[in-house]
Image (cartoon, rainbow, N blue to C red):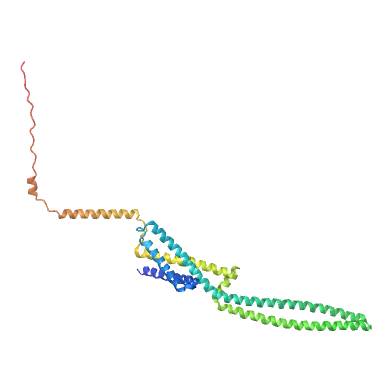
Length: 309
C-alpha cells in the first residue's frame, strides 16, 4: 500500500513538472494570448493523463477505433509536451547564453588588440636590430675614413640618427608591453566573471573537452532530458494503475484456468449436496409396501400324444 502511494506521488510530481514546463514553454511561444494558451495546454495535459488511465482500465470494453484514437492522441500530446519543455529550457539557456556570448565577445576583442600590439612590438624589434647593424656599419666607416672630415661627419650623423630612432622605438615597445599587460589583466578579470554563470561554465568545460560548440552540447543535453521526461510520467501513471487495480491486460494462463474450473466444480457439487439434504426422507415401510414383486408366470408344458399303430 505504501509503495502504491509512493508510486502515485512520484507519477504526479513528474507529470506535474512536465506539464508545468510544457505549459510555460508553449505559452511563451504564443505570448499574444498567454493565459488562454496556458489554459488550453493545461487541459490537454490533464486529458492526456486521464486518457492513459482510461485505456488501461477499460481496454477490453473499448472499441478498436476509440483505442486507436486515444493512443494516437496520447503519443501526439507527449510529443507536444516534449516540444514545450524544449522551448522552456532553451529560453532559460538563452538568458545565460547571451551573457556568456557578450563576455566571449569582449575577450575576443581584447585578444585581437593584444595580437596587434604584439605585431607592432615585433616590427619595432626588427627595426631596432636593423638600426643597430646600420650603426655598426657607420662606426666601421668612421674608422676607415681616417683623417677625412666629410666621411666621418656623415657617419656620425647617421649614427646619431640611428640612436634617436632606436630610443624612440624602445620607448614605444615599453609602452606597448605595458598596454599588453593591462589587456591581459582585463581578460583575466572578464574570464573570472564566467564562473558566476555556473551552468554555462559547466557545459563550456564539457564542450571544450569534446571539442564541440557549446550550443550543440546544450541542445543534445536538452534532447536527452525531454526523451525521458514525459514518457516516464506516462509510464508511471500506467504503473500506478497496475499496482492499484491489478494487471487487467494480462491474459489468463492454463494453470489459472484449471484452478478456476476446479473451483466451479467444487461449488457445483456443494450446491447439489445442499439441494439433496433439503429434500424430505422417504418412509421405508411405505417404500416396501409400494414395492411389489412380480408373480412368476408358469411355464407351459407340452403334452406328448402317442398313437398306437
